[in-house]
Structure formats: C-alpha cells, structure tokens
Amino acid sequence: MAVEETNSDNQKDAGDMPTNTQRPNHAKTVGKLVFVVVAMFGFGFALVPLYEVFCELTGINGKTSDTAAVYEPIEIDKTRTITVDFITRTNTGMPWEFKAVTKRVEINPGELSEVAFYVRNPASRDIIAQAIPSVSPGQAALYVNKTECFCFRHQPLKSGEEAVMPMVFYIDPQLPEDINYFTLQYTLYDITERVDEPVDVAMNSIQGR
Image (cartoon, rainbow, N blue to C red):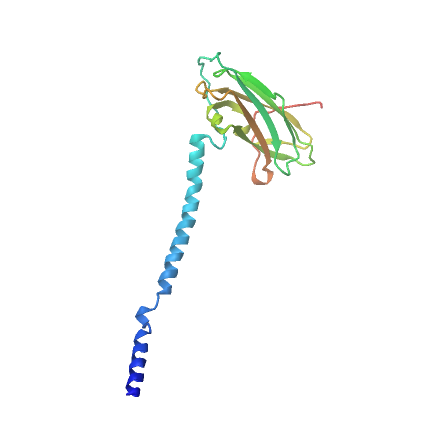
C-alpha cells in the first residue's frame, strides 16, 4: 500500500539523520588547536636562546667577545698578513661624532696591535654611550681577541667633551687560511635613559680644544 511505503521512507530518512553521539566534538577540537598554538609560541621563545648560542659558537652574526682576552706571547705567523678595516657609525638619534683614528691595519696573526677611536659630544646634554662591535665576514669574529676595548663598558661624555678611546687586539693564528681581510665595525648607541650611573672607562679626554 502507498501509506506503508511512505512510512517506510520516513523511517529510512530518520535513520540517516546523525544522532548526538555522531556530532563532531567542537570543544575537543578547539582544545587541541589552543594546545598547538601555545606549544608553537613556547617553541618560538626557545629558539631565541638556541639561536644566540649557535651564533656565539659559529660566529655567523659577527659578534666578538665582550670580555677581555689575556695575551700570552705566542709565535707570530709572519708568513701571513691580515688587513683589517675599521668602520664607525652612530645609531639613529645618537648625536656624537665618532670616527676611527686608525682606519686600517695590516698585521700578522699573533701580533698585538693598538688602534684608537675619536668621539665628541656636541649635544647640549651629557650622554652615556655603548659601542657594539660587528665583524664581517662573521666567521673571523671567532679569531679576534681584544685585550682592551672601550666596548667592554659604557662611554660617558659630558656636553662638549671629546676623547680618544683605545682598542688593543690580536688575531688568533688559527684564523682560516682563506680569510686575509675583514672589517671591524663599531656602532654607538645612546643608552643614557637606561643607565642609572655612568661607569668610567679607558678614555683619554682631550683638553684645550
């Protein structure tokens, strides 16, 4: 009978409809997504110290050591001559005049060398600076040993003052054979607002100018 066929079709359609147990668990899915996001966020933070350690070990970022090296008399490799160019720059907003007195040196690996940098504060306020070094190619940074450097501490200058800042260094004889030239750049940053008290450094103030 037609009535029976209709009832049969209705029963079939009702059987095709998903029950509550078949509906997707949205709360569970959202929970998983939140966990993944948090995990990725934490992993991103973990990458920062790992990257810094990797750069320090490989020297790929060109950063030199921020502690003084102890020079012990070693055999100077007179068969090699390494050319080093010194570059200076100031960060945006830093009004100091900053230049290398010694713009280039040619030295043998193992030889102790001293260079100097000139700074002047033309601003109407006292400023505390910090110099950040960078070597290119970065691999050479692993072999630059500084026994004395203004970059180890802050550089305070009163308004109108000028000074000459020394830097003493030597190149490790283990410097790879394919590196015969590199640049050492110093960038000066104004850190006055971030320092409680200035720290005196090895600076030779210039008087009478």
